[in-house]
Length: 257
Image (cartoon, rainbow, N blue to C red; front, side):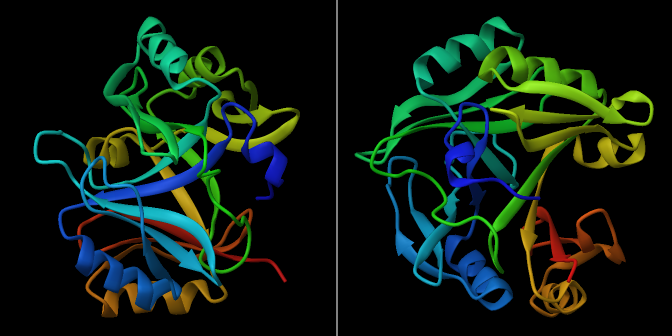
């Protein structure tokens, strides 16, 4: 789960992760206690919005759900793009939909929020003053993103829209696909369990690095969230899946020593 600073700015690579919720203040309290985040004001084009900061460096965003938008309470990765307008057109021409934008986020850049043909929501970010996450790796930072969907073949959409390369990496070919930007792995797409998809629908999952996955999972429950998957050893280390009090699902990973 490694990605260089240069790769994150390559078209199609996740460069930011954001969460839209009903109660921004309560959500800030939850993640401050869970990850040690502090917060700074962000652009307000979509309403109240703050940027989470860890050790003085921006790592994620939290905003209030617009009343007139039907968006899920979910952590959403933003994929880098050189031209949000062109990306918007490509999303539509390749079978996806655009729900928000493209719009200017002040001097920070331009964004859009769309959905792929399976219905999974993602963002696209055209950087200007705001380059995206200032750090990758270390406690409290987003280190990986995986799309859980009905058919991993939807990775073709991301190839066509963002120019990434999709390589089948699962034992049964299309069951798991890894996305590459400039030859480096940046995200993955996986055919998920149908019972899970009936509950949550196709969606992107974000992994946040922590020092103690079991401890963070327990802490999430104490803070009013829930534990969906208990800590267990996975490909990247000890992993657990949790949800915050508004139901946004995320994974935490304690890297191998």
